Amino acid sequence: MHTIEVVLAMLVAVVASGYLVRILPFSLPLPLVQIGLGALIAGVFNRGHALEPDMFFLLFLPPLLFLDGWRIPKQGLFRDKGAILELAFGLVVFTVLGAGLLIHWMIPSMPLAVAFALAAIISPTDPVAVSAIASRVPIPKRLMHILEGESLLNDASGLVCFRFAVAAVMTGSFSLAEASLTFLWVAFAGLAIGVAVTWSVSTFQRWLWRSFGEEPGAALLVNLLIPFAAYLLAEELHASGILAAVAAGVTMSYVELTGRISGSMRVQRNAVWNMVQFSFNGIIFVLLGEQLPGIVERAIETMSVTGHHSAWWLLVYVLAINAVLVVLRLVWVWLSLRWNLLRARMRGEKETTSTSWRVVLAMSVAGVRGAITLAGVLTLPLMIPGGEPFPARDLVIFLAAAVILVSLVGASLMLPRLLKGLELPKDDDSRREEDLARRASSKAALAAVEKARQALVEGQSTSSVQLLNDAAARVSLLYQRNLEKGQGPDEDPEKVRRMEQAYRSLRSAGLNAEREELFRLTRRGQVSDEIARKLIRNLDLLETRQRD
Image (cartoon, rainbow, N blue to C red):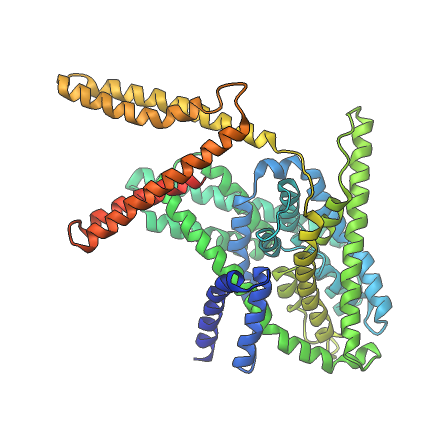
């Protein structure tokens, strides 16, 4: 029963955290609140829930990484692919070398291979943590796209470096050639498996729909199982399950562009995935909070391996490691920016506006660590082949967990200050693309409405023709507004914006009134529950479209 009680307590903590961040008089990021609640649960139940890293990876990470890959803007991902790859692979190796040497210098009793293992597992940033911070901080869109792309890809490079550092501790040897070949297989095989799983499952599912009809419940369940299938297959073939889940999500976004599923299923699927994302994100950080008391206690007990006996030295190590992570990231980002500007000049391109130092520093601070680091470090073996304990295992776990906390707190405190009042270039391209999409889709809709009207009026009586014409006119008015908006070249953009806001506000008031009246009629028994649910769902869909 203890496990069931802990799971229920974690779910309650996730729910409570969503309200606490709104109730608290000071601003705190949601992950920190969830970590605090997790530590509280561990205190109430006297011990944290025993976390099995392999089970943790399998249950929580595949769906979250799949969803991040699915929803990340692909245009931004491919536009900044150079910067993303430099951060996801080059920066990881740079961090492993720099941070590993610093850790070994600070704690000489920690073997160099163990120091490299710690540096490797704290090198990847976490997409879940990055998204959580971004929801509270106004990060520029392009910067956010780069951070998301980096965090989706650097897990493979960090985990491969971690595995080989641990293998060096266990065997006492290391082969650069073997490590390079293994990395290539882990990365490319993982990506290929993710693409293949999503594409094959989607193709088979479309065949089932054509042959036997669409079953929304089964389709939603299959959609939820795809990331687990990609992850398990990749791990079975000794490839990266993490990259397979990401690639499966990216592929799903392209499958979705075929437009072969109904709108109602898309709405249902979006609601289900939003619930999964909120629940799993929360459970990850609650679990981290549950582990903290035990991790700190074991780290203090093993302080003697560092040559110091005061627990305050743990704080010194944590702050020094976090500082060097920020500095290494800052140096890499600055060098990468200089290199890209140099290449642009060599190609004869005009130099664009220089990047603000605040953006560069914000990008360095935004390297938040999270679930990947925690789950990875907990996979450290207990013993080495000689039967001796793994060197400084508890200390390594504590330092990794502390880096997660400090990076979260640091990003939460510093990013708002770094980005406050920062003037960024207007994203005119996005506005133009949105206007183009609205106008083109409205023209297509008007043509389709007219074609359908002509088909319906054939052979109808005069009264029926008039009724159909009136219905077509009412539908056409909805699309005509999109064509007329912003037509005039001299139209004031501020006036257009205020008019749009007024329209949405009035439309929202009308939708709310419709809903309230439907609820009232249902309570009085004048309208059946079935009819009320159907009409209210239509109003909900209209409101969702209005917010978009």
